[in-house]
Length: 104
Image: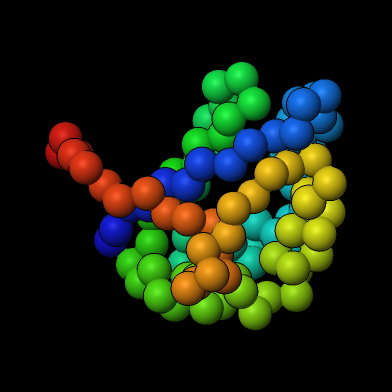
């Protein structure tokens, strides 16, 4: 199991809309995340900055599955107008932050 984190931003004025969309997240999107091997997934917010944290057993598989998943693609299109997302051109996935320290 490995832990991963990303940082994204909500566009100004869309904070409530971002929260509403995640309160009503599509069940098929949650199923796609699970099918990609993601678990223990949380998103935290500070101002307009979002911090996502998740665990997976195989990050390469997770990225490959989500990159090709039509539900994930639709979700990305749905969220694009309200978010700023930097994509890592090597993976086609948001930049992931390297773990610096972990207390077990």
